[in-house]
View 1 (cartoon, rainbow, N blue to C red):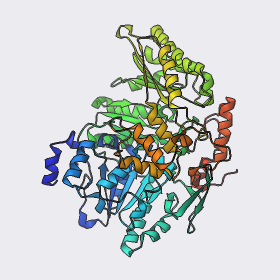
View 2 (view 1 turned 90 degrees about the horizontal axis):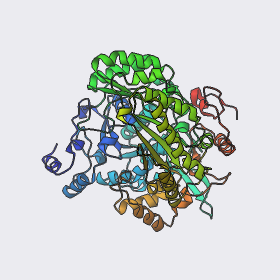
View 3 (view 1 turned 45 degrees about the vertical axis):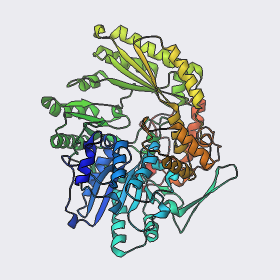
Length: 611
């Protein structure tokens, strides 16, 4: 650490965010390395260090002895001011070297509101934000993550996108870059070669055309690039890299514990859930693998809590055996086990007893909609009877804190559906009064609502988002219907959701909007401290674009989408069929009951699927 950096750290909040030197970080001999990678997370240290994907890819890249992957996070405003004042370029934590000097700068994009932070981090590093202005082979700027299933809004800034799971794909791209660097390739030659790697999307090799009404007319693949890019998956998770040692953060982070990934994908098919479709097909770790990794991660980190991670933890086959095996090892060591992502329709007494054996935490269920009619529309497959049974089990077991999550603005939602949320919360409260093991402690029931955001590659990708005004009207309706002091109601700000919806279904023209916001001071837009709705609306106006065109417009049945060039394995025709089923109120069974032919299984061993 330089004296100048040591000096400015005394003037910022939480300086431990910027020092590095954490236990289990990876430091290499620079003379033995021929490719340097900066893994950049466009949010704060506390958020980035809680991300399991970062830990996995950081370790996977560093498994190659000739590569050194280091971490870099978005600085908070006070640190950014100091860096710019002292003319210190953004640096990597392990070495303290400027990331602009690295061979590759890799961004993890899991949320659309992080886009402005990508531009800000590049600028802080002294790297041109637009890919057209970066003509040299290095630094190569690439990105992966859930948001990249529609890469077009960031296409002006990113050299290439890696689509799908990166344990193998990232290494293929980096090894090609090492070869290109060693052989003196031009950047254009490298990018054309990279486009032949399955799962790589190179935006400079695709040219969109638009109709007079602003919709997409077509996309031309240039120089022999593939017409569609298919995501990459790891077929056998146990054979893929998974860390045995976790970096222990220098300061408190959001999820300060060991995180153990059970499986990828989801069998349920909730029609609003992007992750449930883009992570298909379901692939699981074995119980033996998970037990071994859990013990090594806990021993190497000293953590006193482990959490099981997946889109639906209680759907993991073998969960009782896994939790028993974990608790047998964890209980004597006073290590607690938490199980987020539990479903309200399969929460059992046995599972409850396992969860609370070391330390009891709050419970969270996500019915998503108040009425059974609307839950059928979204294919949630949770009945009120199942929810009440789970609440009874929890209250009999001594729980007195329960959170319920819902969305407002779902397709076909009526005022009766909104009021049904309040009625459901009241029935949960009545359930506590009937079955609570200890009524003297009281009960805290929290109802939270967020604004529905239609996402690409889901059955609701054609739908319109309700207006901010309409969302707030429904919030007011629900708020006035909740009368008990034991029920707290929280709602998420709708202005952020409007911008998120516009970005998630945006096209390449939104690059101008993102750049306008950044040049006007935008960054860290997932934080209320920095998000400015007025700044975003001004940027849209300056670019001659309307956010409602992307967020609030119902798409035509035959409309071409900016993300149609990306194949996540689930067919567009299947999604359209699921949309029709939603309007008919027809439930689609989950994958364990019957395969509905979505197409995702075609990704396994590249097997052929019938249309």
